[in-house]
Length: 151
Image 1 (cartoon, helix red, strand yellow):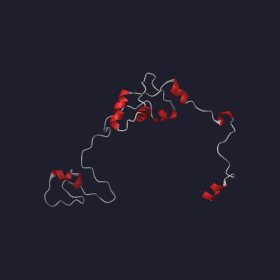
Image 2 (cartoon, rainbow, N blue to C red; image 1 turned 30 degrees about the vertical axis):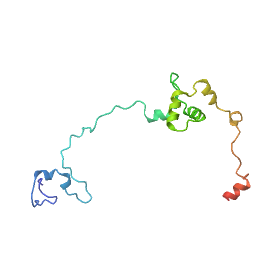
Image 3 (cartoon, helix red, strand yellow; image 1 turned 180 degrees about the vertical axis):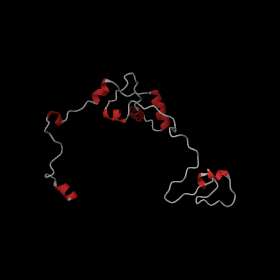
Image 4 (cartoon, helix red, strand yellow; image 1 turned 45 degrees about the horizontal axis):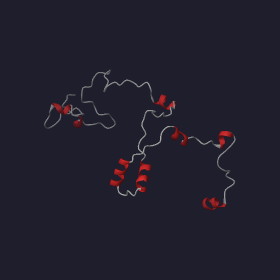
């Protein structure tokens, strides 16, 4: 079958160009079959795209090992906007320009270090001391209000 013949082998009618044989949009498709290839493909060992080196640390390594965040000890604390806005309100600075100027004149920074760690100390739970402690209540002991609401 020549490049200008139709799929059934009959010659095409009308204007015939050699580019018609390689134009994907002009090639007819047969029912139940893949469209025929109109371009010259490279050899079988040809790889499309750039080969990228594999990362040694993949998803499995990342998800199977949990590392807690450790803050940088040399980092400077950021501005404490809550304290500065409260102080500005106490000095009757009501609009945004007055508050910005007041914050520039009276900067406050967030507390960092030992004071912050004391605030974040974990309170002991009852289950820490008693391994048989369970939280919640038994389902048989429902109050009247809950029974009325849920049925």
